[in-house]
Length: 137
Image (cartoon, rainbow, N blue to C red):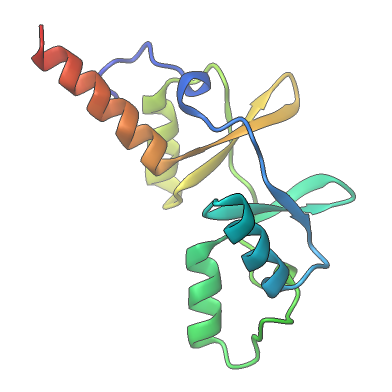
């Protein structure tokens, strides 16, 4: 799928995973996302990732779920399970996982440790850059 199969997830991922505990509120998630300028937060239990909440999850829950309020715990709206990709996977591999799972973000793992997050936008940017460089040849 990728124009350059040698481009690895490691090269395009964000290394800073922003996370909050599952017991915190949707309001806390929103504040964290605004403060850190990110589109998602990983939800944890005892420091271990168990889900993810995105801007889209928040908007959908507030628009369509009558029982959901800003004080509701993020656990109620988080997407789970988390889908993971290796730092050594290609961007094509990551794009395939996202397409098959209909998701836009993957947690990146190296040696059983979570080391980053890669988004659909990261992959699009990498593929566009590769395509541009091919045009300049």
